[in-house]
Image (cartoon, rainbow, N blue to C red):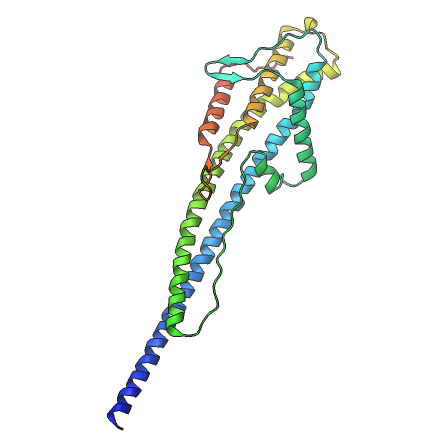
Length: 285
């Protein structure tokens, strides 16, 4: 065989072999990219689901507390000659004064939310919106058409891999944020429940006194009955303040990640814990 033909044949074989190697490398890269992509997507989905459920549970608790404000306001308005309770200010803890109309409006809104969502765990939208923490996140990764040419396929596989790496960094950031939000919401929910454990018996006792025992003259209330009303009023104010806390602080720059509003959450938690620890909530009515 003439030398030029031999060289040409060798070059052709070399080119085919090189192309086959490139295709094999590209396919391996694609396969690894697909696995990483599935891992990214699954991790994001798991964390989003966990955080959403946590926020939904907290939102439901908040809505139930707000819904109860109507019963408190209704009972309070029936008590004649009651004093004007001053805002609570002690040891850095501040609790706003009673505002019956405002509390009733909040209660109506909470009832509407609970009613519209029925038996669902307050749903994703309701639970999250209830505490101002909106999750509008999505992970997408579109793979382009496969071009069966060694070099072209290799370049596309490399580009796809780079996309997966970028997506992984994004997923890590989002999941870190969701994990922080989940932890903050769980801790805040625990504090919220600590207040409610004291609030529900007080509210029940106060409503029973007014609506069932028909005690509506403040001057005829015993000291323990007056203390029950006063403590219930303070607990309502505390809960109302806690309900106003926004769990998420929106990013100032578009495209940046939102932040957990940890400062406000910690302050509300500290105020609640300190208030519960420094006051006697023993019911004797």
